[in-house]
Image 1 (tube, one colour):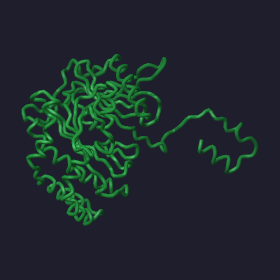
Image 2 (image 1 turned 30 degrees about the vertical axis):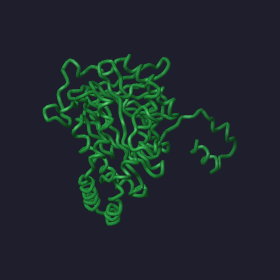
Image 3 (image 1 turned 90 degrees about the vertical axis):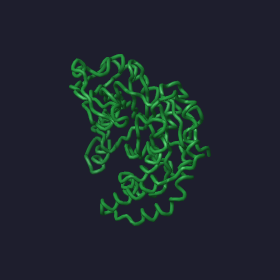
Length: 348
């Protein structure tokens, strides 16, 4: 298996995880995906192998009834990852694709994707999102990529990831971490697009959007507008709120994000126009058609240009859905009602 893949090469799920495999597929269909390259699971496995036995020992000693025990184990494992000394050849291999792909001075995101040895235990799979558990670093300069890479690998054993795997009876070491290095989009407006309503499963596009970078929307750190794009005569429903703040790159510090005020003339206006929403709805339908299931899509706008940054299956708990039916129970079950009548009625 190749250790590094460019976005133009075939990227299989077991090599780069669902996050980047889908990005490759979308780029191949001329969807607006920023350029990227990936360090595959093979790279992680080669680096992790010398640590495997010791990490297994640390995990075996965890007291799962004690949060401090889990936290301490996660910290100990992270320390071991940070101490990894990559060889000059390995460092060169990691940075080699940067210059051909990106212009000088380009800032990138360094993002992880956990790939389970069993496909159903991978991040962004239909059954397990692992949402927000693998680390992401934004606005990373070329000279900081190697440092961030170690942190992303370590996030496979974050406290949250350990607890999630334990609660779902997964092998604590049964995964690898692929890492994507992707051109950073300095979003002016950001959105999360659901191609069906995640609460009701209703076939309409739900768009949550705000000014600034997407972390404000995804992590609910800023006020967001909500839009419901419905087909036919129903049109677009808007729930517009005042948006006093947005998250932006902290240029003074040179890293991280900072909150700043939204210009007063924009605060109470919808952050997306009807034309924006129609374009997003059309893109969402294309992505859903590609992957054959309702999608949770993250993206950004710079001026009028839309970028798609992530797509994954919507995690819908169908046991919580209320479904309306036109079934006529009286006609279906004439005569005396019995326990069987009520059992069937309850099911439908």
